[in-house]
Length: 326
Image 1 (cartoon, rainbow, N blue to C red):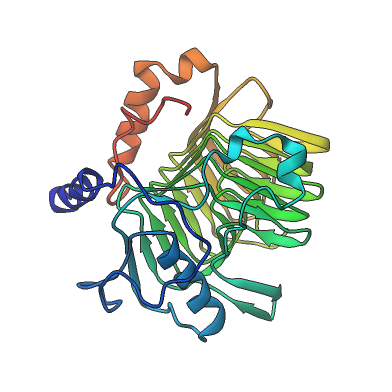
Image 2 (cartoon, rainbow, N blue to C red):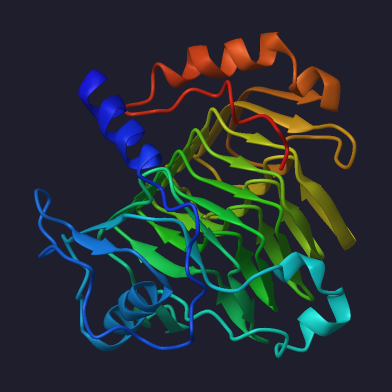
C-alpha cells in the first residue's frame, strides 16, 4: 500500500503545469512504452490520447490486457464551460474530442479493455455532442480499469446513456476518479456524473462528481443506471456527489437513478439540495448512503468517514483535499 501511494504521489508531482492544447490531429506513436505492466504506453498530450481512441476503434481488441499511463495533464479544448449552452449544444463550439471505443449495438462494439492510470492528472476540455446513445470520453469499457483520473471543464451532450467519464461499463472498475466543473446533458434518459450505465460485476469506488447533470429521466450523481432490470453484481461504494441534478420528467438519485437486483450502493454521500434519495428506483441493496448539506459535506466528520472507508479499498486515495466542489 505504501509503495502504491508513493507511485501515485510521484505521478502527481510530475504533472505538467502548462499543458499544450490539442491541435486536432492524431499522433503516430505514444510518448513511450510497449503496453506492458512494467512499461505501459505513455500518453502526454491530446494527440496521443486521440491515438488511443483511434487504435481502440480500428484495431480489434487492441487494448486488451495492455497498460496506459498519463504523464501530464491534457487539455483537449480551453474554457469549454465558459461558452453558453446554446453554442455548446450545436456541436461546433470546439473540435470534438474523439471517443475511446465504438458502439453500434450490443453485439457490435469496440471497447477499451486495458488498464488506464491517470496517475493523478486531469483531462480537461472534453467536448462531445452526438445525437445518439452511449456517449463519453470512454464510450464503452469491458474488463477494464480506469484509475486516478479527473475530468474537468468538459461538456457532453447526447440522447441516452451519457457519462462524465464512461458511458457503458461491462465488468470494469473505476477507482479514484472524478468529474468536476463539467456538464452532462441529454434529451433522453440515463445520464450520470461519471457513468451512464454499468453491467455485470462493475465497480465504482472512491469516486466523486460535482458536475451539472440533466436529462429527461433517470439521472444519477454518480451513475444513471445499474444494469437493465436483470440481476447484476455491481458495486458503488465510498463515493460522493455534489452534482446539481435536474430532470425534465422524473427519476433522479443523488448517487444512482436505477439500481438492479443483486447490486449494492453503500457508504456514499450526496448533496441534499437537488434530490431526495441516494437511489430513486432501488431493487438492489442500499447501505449507509446519506444526504448532506454543503456545509456538512465540507465538515471534518465527512472527510474522516470517507477516509476511514477508503482504507478498505485497495490503492484508494485520501479525501482531505478533494472536497472543494470545483
